Length: 204
Image (cartoon, rainbow, N blue to C red; front, side):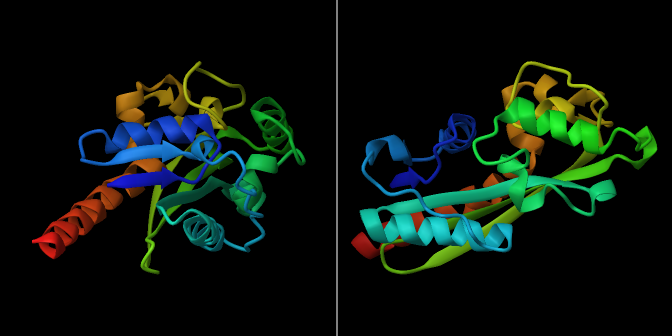
């Protein structure tokens, strides 16, 4: 099965491709479609954005498409940055600017009040018009300063007490197993197995 990953984020592409490597799936990125117009992520929820991306790219390419929308929800900020996680510090802002703004907003919040969670929604759209959605979460705390060189986004600030490390300090294999996206991907792998079996039975 050929699967188009509807994201331009290299970190997400690597994580998704790694999770799929044990399956008879050929993941390709949007690099294969340089002329494709970007999808405007104007939904009010992660689910709306992921589904819109998957369906729009599926219609434009005729491919089976996997899209995701994910972000960080901080309790002390009433769920912010939420769906605006990638552009928290403004359009075009990078990870460093987003992390700096998050730390500034939490400057007066004590360590015990820095609970947060990563949340991800995956949407799979097929050329026959079907759409499947799955999600995953990962709970942690926001540190007062970044730690670790791995991952991307808010990973250097997202601390996992049970591991004593930030998301950026985990090995890629462990991160892919326990992260919000990794947990959603575990459900996706089961869905892909079902779709592959369905395809094989149809061919038989």
